[in-house]
Length: 175
Image (cartoon, rainbow, N blue to C red; front, side, top):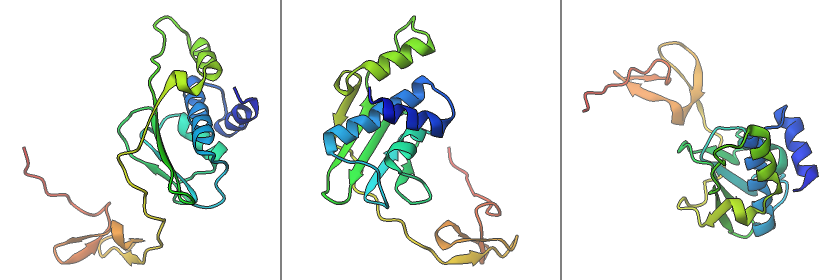
């Protein structure tokens, strides 16, 4: 276990837990297998398939964040993280294959994760998703219903008016 990475993630997250350990070990795996480190800008991208504690480790250790545009949420609910290196084109999907032992308490599971090799707890594959587009700056438009502004790619056309997602009334007649 890399104690320095663990402590950095715990400070950011606010407490120790098995979920954070999963994220720390996923980052460790990406660092070992791809040679990546802290991302100054968007050179390292992570697509997380969950919105659990481990995502905080990705933010603390690799500096991937929603605000920088290099942390993207793809909600499958799986303990999986896809890492992309824009500098050299490398990409790697890290998936937690190790199930929580049936009788293990949280602390025991956390310790098992932290003290296992990345190859014991994860499977590795190439992401099915291609490199994400770089973050873009969009023109903001004013909603013709509430008057609030939102980026153009988040606006909808409804009854001839430009409206935000909050004001848009979805039409569904599906099955």
